[in-house]
Image (tube, rainbow, N blue to C red; front, top):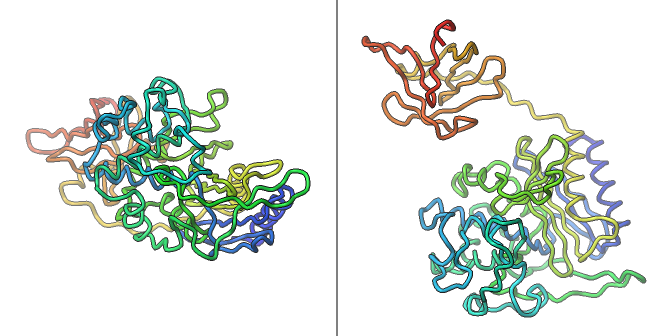
Length: 433
């Protein structure tokens, strides 16, 4: 990063640690898949990229990714009702999709002692304690954040695979991404978590309980260096770990958290934030003694991860710090310019499809870059990508024609005369379009 960007990031971290009255604060900047800068402030402990902090609800992003993996393996459908996988549950009328997006109407927490400060129970115990009263709202009636929903999603994953949530997270996500310092329990060196006394600034260390059945909602521990790998994966998914289409689905808005200004929302396991013309995704997290944030700007492949080992931050929030840091980097760093590289010629049967086409007086161009790309000449950014779907048939994979069919129309002699995209017929002659 540029020196002035580094200075601004360091200033924001140092100022937030001081005015926020937190024992330690550490943040990392991710660009193009790599951790490019780490900034820390405070002395309890002196933070670095390898110190573990508890990530709280950022754990939900891993749970959601696990559920999408199981969907991609055809082991569940997002529209399955919960009782299909957890028979007999009194809240079985909600779908997997609704649970992921916090629109299932379930109450925020499970019954009993506050799960974040109490020893966890077995998933069977969590299910046994459920009553119909756990449905606080009708499904899809309103956005209502629910930790309980993610405890149930963890139980679904365990019921389907016969393996614990943690075992699956480890082998399906952490190991492939080489996240060896992300763990279920803390592993030294780790920052102890505190509540800061509001009047005299003393520290009270918080217990570190095993969340048991609620672990999928907030159990994990990680470091800046490790969580940076997860931010990089969400920005530019590795298909061997998680299908890019699944990550795109995770970050697509399902519910708005702010109906007045539309500055926040929720996808499938990911929080969404709008700041000006930029849209970020990720998640915040908290557990007793800890706050955390992961925020990503997909278009620039830039992300921020940050932690503190206090349960509150005077005069601000860890979420706003993360978005402020991300905005500071994007405001100061030039956009990465992707070099043009020579292409390869299209297959012989595809070449006649390329060139200029007309529809309703508008000019379009069809090109080849390993796939078929169609866009208005006046606005190349509005591109539609197509992949083969049979003889003279192509399937849309982006933009307004995602999922639609492009059919090649031919003359009796076999020549291409038109392209039919979802009944919109494109011809070579503007007078016939």
